Image 1 (cartoon, rainbow, N blue to C red):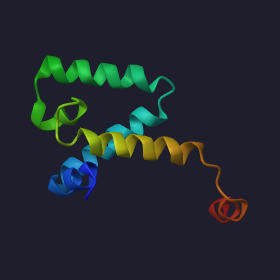
Image 2 (tube, one colour; image 1 turned 90 degrees about the vertical axis):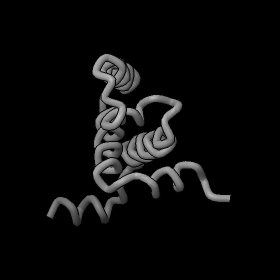
Image 3 (cartoon, helix red, strand yellow; image 1 turned 30 degrees about the vertical axis):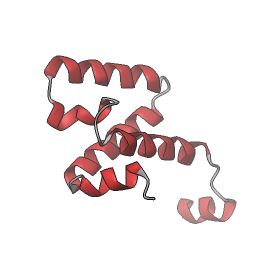
Image 4 (cartoon, rainbow, N blue to C red; image 1 turned 180 degrees about the horizontal axis):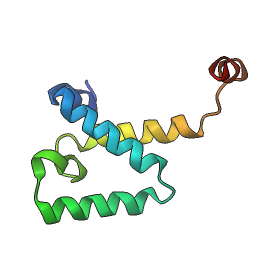
Length: 91
């Protein structure tokens, strides 16, 4: 059985995926990501721009993809880089 986030991301356009990934990175990197996410959700509800920001709503079909991207970015931030990769990046 295919994961819901995989099927949701497949139905999303490249532009939608990029927008979701940018927001997920922003929220994951923010010190108070929950507050940033709450502010974005409030903005979504005020503007009613569901086409652009609807994925923030838990009932939206792309919300699982957003959550997957957010958690992935949080894990990437917390995961230490190997010493060899860090040295190569510094060159």
